[in-house]
Length: 479
Image (tube, rainbow, N blue to C red; front, side):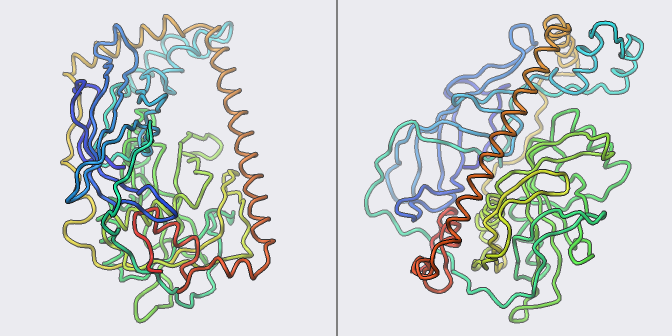
């Protein structure tokens, strides 16, 4: 679901209302139950604010969702909590949203823990003083969920769905056109294999730009000294940079015509697409090839002289996210898929990270978006700045001293390094197991007889992947 009004640990009180709407409908027998954008209501259960930082270093916010508001029906009572904040910096543990610790940052580690390592003395006090003067950056510890924040919500207990619900609005299934022989991958400027070409749009340039704008996407800025410094500030401040530069990859030795991104609250988490105009058209409508990727984290790399973004392992989820956003904005006229059976399903990008895909190429025909679509259902943006400058300065000093008293020692540094190492090893092991399982699943799928595969195909080229995506956005194809 997507929040339509802001919620903050700084100002929220227990019992305060929380409002949003469905992005993805629950399914029954592979069919969507509710249409998208159905309102959902809940309330704040508990709040823990940082305040001056004397009692608490981190904030916490627990939200319970209570009802789904269908048109012309009685509300459906539910009991659900937040499982994940998809596009925010905050983590969720046992249904409680946990805010960040402001001192858990690169500059926080440099200015406290590292100077206490025995005998090394890499950061003497004069350096620390200069560093703090040059980089007076201190991330906001309070939780601030803006309108447009996407939440994964799970039911705490089962819900009885009323019978004879109204039919879910449908979206047409596209019979894909004969596409030109597209490369499967993009390349970096150095000739390394990069992302997967996984979307094709049929639309005029104005309709294409309008659709992404209505869906809340923005054009990225060009690389410059100003944008690099602004990106560095967002990285250190653990906040967002909505139009951060995107590296220009090449498709058939051409740079993208459009580079668009969607960022909410986190510097490391963002959705982005690179789009190239093709020479071919379909019924007189231009075709555009695109590679869509979701980034899940950012690292400042000295070897690469810049920021390295980690990508989500499941590339198909990003395809679905792009289609979902455009469908929510009522900009999708029809949708189809083109299979690429010879494509590898587990790949490595230019940074050496693995990701997986079923190889399908989605073809999306766009239409002019309605005036009340897209971000119109969201509340107005608000400037979140808790307290005055004096308050924030005093809180910063209190939190810094508090962190140094507990963590500025070689014992904590060693334990923290051990924790991070074990976490990285576990994450790498889980990734390898997931990729191995995915390879095995795809091998079994491809080894099935052709007859059994053809029996699973719905008519009008609405294959299983298309039906799955359409059901996921609350719209199912005609059968």
